[in-house]
Length: 304
Ligand code: HSE
Image 1 (cartoon, rainbow, N blue to C red):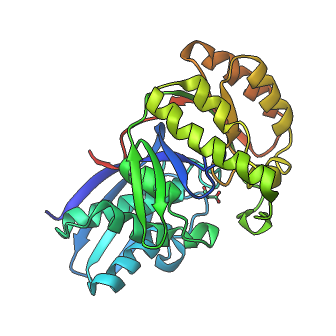
Image 2 (image 1 turned 120 degrees about the vertical axis):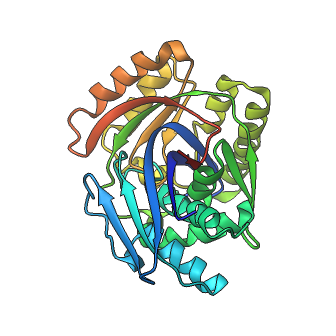
């Protein structure tokens, strides 16, 4: 096998209180990735469609960095050309960088018949995230690779649990980040009361998935004391839109990954109303792109 065409889904990380631990795969949007092995001993990356100013250089691209890490760990050299067929807007907290890194590692695992475990692939793919956020967080790449709802059971060594998720409707307001990453502004000193609430909410998220209860799930993700205070205040209109969608049927609403996209989970019948509120609420924000009505999905990276 010399080439492979893959689809890698968008993911929403953190899912409210699960900073760097929780993520869920979305049915749409997604990017496609085509990897073709060659004899050049060089790795080249190309974007099909707009490259959105994402670097193609190996050491600055999430896919490139992940591939280099695989070469380093397993002492491999292999020429290849990687085409990233972009459907997703990057820099919005939808896990597009994680999708690229996961797709590249999944594809190479197949093409080079490496038989890597899921945890090994996630551990390689997360190294690609350094190119975008400066930190090898594993949440987005885990959900992109495995689909469903993923939780990082341990970072050292890296171990991930995948839960199959009911298909919860998700409304996503795609908003670009004003800056590259806001991770550096997050403070972890949240105090005893908020820490306990955070743990309670994380536990409830897991229980709600097992119970197939979108209302319980939504209630649990409404509050996050770690990333939301920093990121929410940097998104014009966030508080107002969140309040309005919750008053009009959303079960839960929070920031998707590193932001600045916003997601709401709801019953299917409420998706259009929530989409309208988001469209209206963010219309004046120059970084607002569009609203997508989608759902959670148990499909991760897959061969087309
Ligand atoms: N957990 C990461 C963060 C996800 O919050 O920065 C980035 O999409």
